[in-house]
Amino acid sequence: MKTPAHEVLDREALTSDGVRIAYTWWRRPSRELLVLAPGFWRVRLAPENLFLANHYLRLGYDVIVLDFRGHGDSGGAYSFGKSEPEDLRAVLEEVVGEKKPYRGFALVGLSLGGTISAVTLARFPHLNGRALVLVSSPADVLAVRPRPWKPGALRQMHLRQALRMPRLAARKLLARQPPAAEAVSRLTLPKLIVTAEGDWLVDPSHGRLLASAAAPPVEHVHLALPGSLHADALVKFVPLRLLRVLDPWLLRHAPP
Image 1: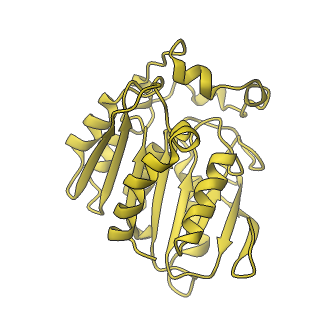
Image 2: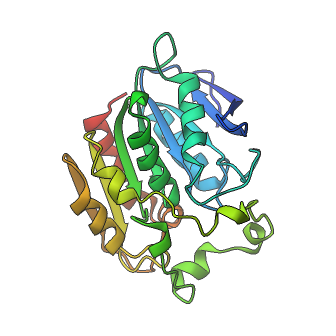
């Protein structure tokens, strides 16, 4: 969506290890930036991300969504959290800081995008995040146990997505990934952790672990929903339920 009140910019940032990261920037302009970090196998221009971007644009935010390495229009290969904090850092350092459009930002991470977001903020505290939301995010990537026979998996996986498999960094797949539980224990910014009943990919126990490990302030909201929905499936199938949780929290902790 584009209206005369804002512009849509497609940009690239270069990471410290030389990877081109594509991102789209919806700019009103507003004083507050909201950054969406997609999960694995999800690209920035997926319908669910576009829905969230336009929703928060209407609420008064500027919005950025990126393609992590190995996805969409970005270069490189995906490493399941080992290198991706550099992607988020590269994008944020282009627009946040002294003499740049924003002094701070709110960060919403879906699935593994939330894990990467937490690790990024803990590793690079100079980025000055104002609020962090993790939706269906794993506390430890290596502890994820998918249950593809559940209804939510069948509703979320499509042949079109299967044919667009991300590029993977094979040598890093078995490397120890930074645990989000450790990262949130070091973050003192407001944090919201959202889990869903019977999540087919990331069991809600991950969210409980994150909430118990997190430094205050932190809130944990569990959605008692049927369907074993995960991350962007919440956006697709129950958007109002999700937004009734996210919107008041973001408006309280990082108002536009």
